[in-house]
Image 1 (spheres, rainbow, N blue to C red):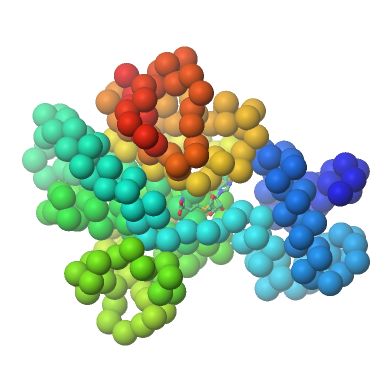
Image 2: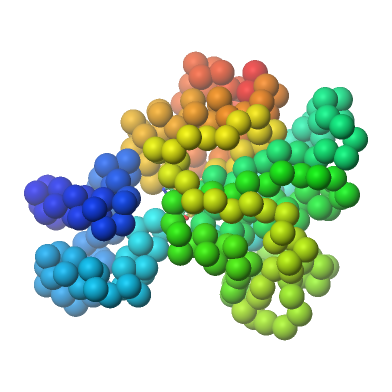
Length: 266
Ligand SMILES: C[S@@+](CC[C@H](N)C(=O)[O-])C[C@H]1O[C@@H](n2cnc3c(N)ncnc32)[C@H](O)[C@@H]1O
């Protein structure tokens, strides 16, 4: 794809979807866009943008494609097990020393997509710290994904494959697939629209989970984002990233390696 074509797409995507593609890796995004146009069978991006201005369904499909809404419960199970075994005991101990007895952890799923990461977090907290008042925030820039997250589904069998039978019985409505999350779990999470690059962050989090989001960002975008996460953590709070998302020199922004995928605020 020629650079002027890509510039034009960036302009239209910003105008129509309010997504700023300059934050995302150029080469990867241009490849994805090329293959998207091939799938539509239209011959030019001008034609495609004409189509999406009056076809809401196509617009949603395009948004989902651009934001890459791939996700599943307990995605990378071994990392979630590491969270449970190596990270949460420390956070729980800290919380016990600092908070009122009924207070739980303050956690944030940043780039939560259709919600399964936030529900995974809610399940983990329910299992290891039941009966506490946790604060679970979940955000994404994609309104369509958030609508599904708030509705608690529907989720397909391949998305729920890492749940144990006990978890399925406890947290999913009976029937399905497709599956829906029980209201008792869903009501524990606050879902909110937020653009990580441009919007303000809440703060004082014990744990921030931002997995498989930053991977698509340019180095400049990452360099802006990591310090914002650091500021949003309380001292001793932990940032949980995706498998290939590595902060190059964490000490420079006040973070320390804390095992694979985890960084702790000094
Ligand atoms: C591949 S999904 C990851 C979902 C989940 N975190 C997981 O690992 O299963 C990437 C998500 O990041 C969101 N995203 C991308 N850029 C974003 C931004 N600038 N602000 C907020 N969310 C963003 C997308 O909308 C998408 O839902």
